[in-house]
Length: 215
Length: 260
Ligand SMILES: Nc1ncnc2c1ncn2[C@@H]1O[C@H](COP(=O)(O)OP(=O)(O)OP(=O)(O)O)[C@@H](O)[C@H]1O
Ligand SMILES: [Mg+2]
Picture (cartoon, rainbow over the protein chains, first blue to last red):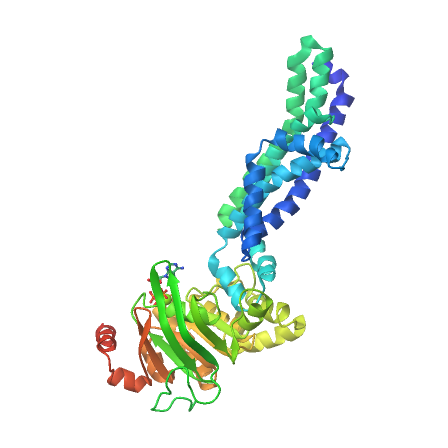
């Protein structure tokens, strides 16, 4: 375990990068995914189509391929970004598809009667969504969103392969120098991931029970 | 309330300016032809009760009037204006048509008062205070003012339905649609809702009511429209319809509902 303790500053730096990747991408994916979710239930067919195509493409492409596109292909189109923002973009694109589906099923969990009542007092589609549907959908949507965040946290490790010095990247570099200490290093890496994912999972479980009781 | 005399004007050609007009309206659900060449014209202040066996298309007809259901062909006019397709114009038009559902559909996350003020504030852009004052007056009128701070789930079915009526009235609609407003209620609560509706009818509100409450139809309707298999089979003032139905299908329907 000495390697971990000796290199603690390095680990903490990696952890900090991982956390930032997860939080930034998570926040952006939440916004983009919610907009896409609204598209998916929109009465306007082209918007519905856009949402569907996005979800099917992003969800069914391996994350590494998404990264590859953002990191190596966009510079060729004249859009040169540092590695960290590129990683955030790739993670956002990928995660937004899952957020979109969670939001959509949350919206669908609110009875059609609520939407019909909202529309019949003259609320527009956007107003119905904002004032009637989404506030009620949030209750069902939060636990799956936390699970998506957990998956996102684990997915940030892919960024390590694309020159971002996050946890996994740090671990891999350390194993190069300490061939005999691979196991403790990997355990160290895993523990840091668990620091984010376990509390998130506990929170999701608690909220899930709360929603179940309130029903 | 003199719009329909003994001589019901021929459909689509009512005297004066009719408030709601359906012209040769057709609608399918897949292969099912739910509305077949519907012609119906409703005068301002008229109370029309729609009767018919289950599955005859009553709800669908009601819901096409505020375009909760689109139609395949034909025309629907409200106050001389054709119903627009989706979008802002449709939303504006819907705000002039009040709708009361069988299952109340009150906004579950909002209090009774907020349920009634949401439309006036968001759609009519009223100031919150103004909207609240008129909402309280409406809740008073339907007899649930003392429940204003509660959530829908804390109210009885009858109270919820009266709140739903207040919510619709808050938009000052030109016409009110009721789709079996008492069918989900325990028997002892039916009358409190029907009383509110009868008062509304007396006050001159234009109403389209799908119901199985024959007492209400006799008492409050100006005209009964009988539907079967997606068509309007017969229409007449209530006393004539109930005592002297012309078609076999209407007679058959009446014999079934009046015997049990
Ligand atoms: N969204 C839908 N999709 C497919 N079929 C539908 C839909 N809504 C209604 N129908 C069918 O259309 C027909 C007419 O339905 P509608 O609800 O208008 O009848 P109704 O006269 O109101 O009957 P009830 O007295 O049972 O309420 C029924 O056969 C029904 O099954
Ligand atoms: Mg019905």
